Structures are given as C-alpha cells and as structure tokens.
Image 1 (cartoon, rainbow, N blue to C red):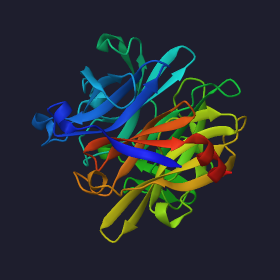
Image 2: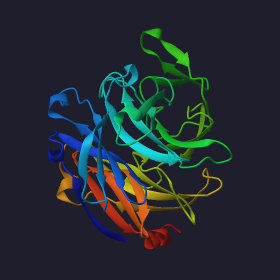
Image 3: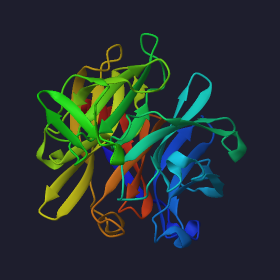
Amino acid sequence: MLKFKKVVVKPRDWNAELTFNPAVYYDGETVFLWPRIIFKEDYDLYVSKIGLMISKDGINFQKVKIVVQPDKPFDKMGCEDPRVTKIDDTLYMTYVALEHGAWTGTSRTALIKVGNPLDERTYEKLGVITWENVDDKDVVLFPEKIKGKYVILHRPNLHRDNVQIHYGKIFVKFGKLGWKEFKYKIDRIPKRPSIWIAFTEDFKIRESKVLYEPSERWESWKVGAGAPPIKISEGWLLIYHGVQRYNDKKVYRAGVLLLDKKDPTRIIGKYGPILEPTEPWEKYGEVSFVVFPTGAFIKDNELYVYYGAADTYIGLAVFDLDKLVNEIL
C-alpha cells in the first residue's frame, strides 16, 4: 500500500532553521508547495512565514520566494500550517494566525484568497474565520460546495483554561474583559480534541458539530484534519493526524477517513495508521516522533501525501490508491 516515502524539502533549501507542514496543490502539470518556514533570525520568537516552491514531478522542488508574511494585527506573530484548496476557479489558503506568539495565546485560523500563486501581491487576506478567543487549528476546506454551502473541517479546543461550562452553558475568557457566554451553536463538547464539521455561506464558522472523535489507541490524545478532502468515486477521502501520549512523550501518526459523498457528516470507512514515524528524519528533530500531513493529491492512481516530519523537514509518502481504498472499505 505504501510505495515509498522520502524527504523532499530540507531547511537548507531555504537557508532556514525549520521547513515543515506544507500546503500543496497540483494543477495537472505543476505541483505548488507552500512550506511553513522559520528562519534563524525568527527562531527565538518562533515566528513562521509561508514560502512557495514548484515541481514537475512532485519530488524535486524549486524554491520560488516567500509569499505570506505576518503583516496583519491578527497574524503579527506568525503564519503557520497552511492548507490550500481550489473551489471553482479560485485557490483558498487556510493558515494558523498567531496574534500573541507561539505558546502564549490562542491560535485561530485565517483565510487567504490566492490569485496568481507566483505573485505574492495577489494573496488577499480575508481575516479570521474561526471562533473568537477559542484555540482552533487544522482547518481545511472541501473543494466544492455541498447543498449550496462551503464545508469546513476544524479542530476547536474547548478544553483549555479559557473555556468553562456552568449549568450547561459555555463561557470563554476574553482577557481583561473577563468571561463571556459562547455565542456559537454546537451539538456537544467531545472528551478529547476532535474533528468538527461546519457548513457556511461565507467561510465564517457560526455553528458546527463533532464529526470524528479519537477512537483508537494510536490517536487517543487528539485528532485533527490533515490534507483537504479529495473526492473519489467511493466518497470523500480525508487524511488526518492522530496523537498518542506516553507520559511526557507524544507520537503523531496519520490515518484516513472516508466520508459520504452527499452527506460528509457520515463516516463510511476508516483505516489507520497509514503513516507513522519510522525513519530517523521523522523520529528526531525539532519535535520528535511526528508525521503531520497537510497536503495531498492523486496522480496516476497514486496518492501523494506531503507532511511535516519532526517539525523540521517535509516528507512525501506515496500510496497505491486502490489498495488503500480496499483497506478502508
């Protein structure tokens, strides 16, 4: 099923400290890859930028330039973990927008409308689309509307210190403003950080429901969407990550869900892990024992999955699509 995996981008390709967690889009001729990059001069504050690379074979990449920088109040401390989806004729990029810096505040997700991928001047930041003052990452868009609405997967963390439940109501702490009642509509709060699904007319998430909770030992700590869903004849193929915790150690692996084509709130199959840290470059690095998928496409009946490896490198894993689908079903 797994045909091979290898490193395709290293920090030295950008003269950087770290290159990982890339967005990917394949237009049938060219593979566009947007790596998250932390340069040496930004390492102390852990400020990330997003670059662009291109390839004809999906393996050998050419550096282009930095295309997304932290230049707005909501992302002034970093732009992290992009994902790219094409809807109709437009590319959209979701990314984690840090307003207060790594590890110091709530991470929310913002949206960019991309004109020409090669021209950074055509990257239009549309603002934050996730809930106010709630940690919310792993946001991916479906590549088409369903029943007239955009469909979004996300991973809100309603278990942090700034979230409390009193008499069945959810309250969120807004810094010096104190506690305010949570104003968004949800079906429930899962026991562990989970994958949620939302339908929206304008990309902003106002109501959402739990799609998938951790259910296996290898993903028992938390799960999150990885690459944007891919439509195949059997349904929507969703690659996701799962985390298992061993005392003070965490291991990130990847699995796959198959969602119903007409009703993506319905899971019709799952399998995993399909990818786990086994190579030295996956096991040792900035954050050890991590494979973190963020982009994928299908070419010649093979599934190309791009992922952050040990928060240091970018890896590529190639799967036989038919064999993978057989395992899911």
